[in-house]
Length: 74
Image 1 (cartoon, rainbow, N blue to C red):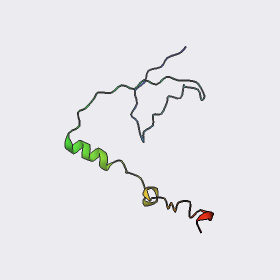
Image 2 (image 1 turned 135 degrees about the vertical axis):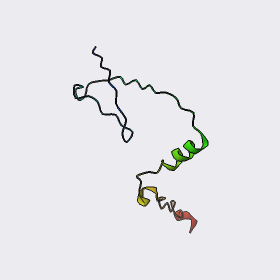
Image 3 (image 1 turned 60 degrees about the horizontal axis):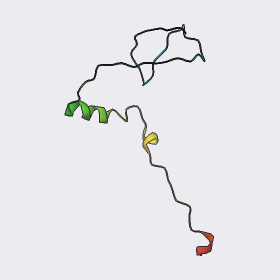
Image 4 (image 1 turned 135 degrees about the horizontal axis):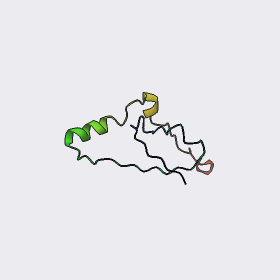
């Protein structure tokens, strides 16, 4: 088994692996971070950023018309 330790900053909820990690190789990822207590303002900012980068089309509700009337009901 080989091990590698590196520091990186996630971007768009993804982490870029170093070039030395071959494609298809099983890896174990350990995430460690300092917990930060969220204040009311930070929590509000977090909720506001949930839809960041989404378009109106992404957020549109699907048009679900149901299954219609069953044939025996008419």
